[in-house]
Length: 130
Image 1 (cartoon, rainbow, N blue to C red):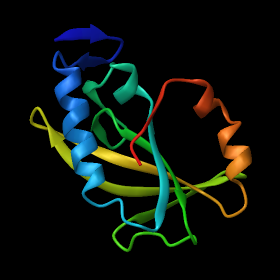
Image 2: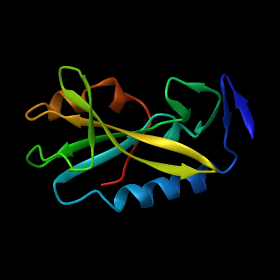
Image 3: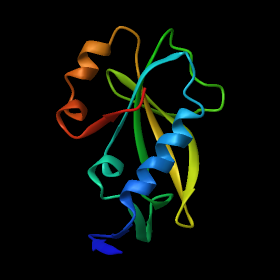
Image 4: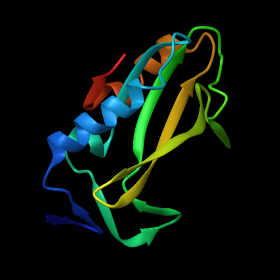
């Protein structure tokens, strides 16, 4: 494993990404028109924190979704954080290399799709999974 700032980067980045995609696709239903991964998982800098960071032991999985009618999946927890064009939800968690990684879902608000696609998120590395 390689060291990067305050976390240990997993050596098996491709396998980790595959596992995350399979997990996410298992619950991305027809209400979700589009879904994109971004952040450390697609930048191949995904890993475990050396010291617990806030409530996280490992990198979180960043997902942005566009919903058909604003139907939030019933098991997603509202984290009471929002910006002008998105609301943040906890979309679950997955164990990778013995560490729990939480899934943070940015849900694009109704009629804000164009603004979302012009955001900095879409200027960086992203991976469409749906």
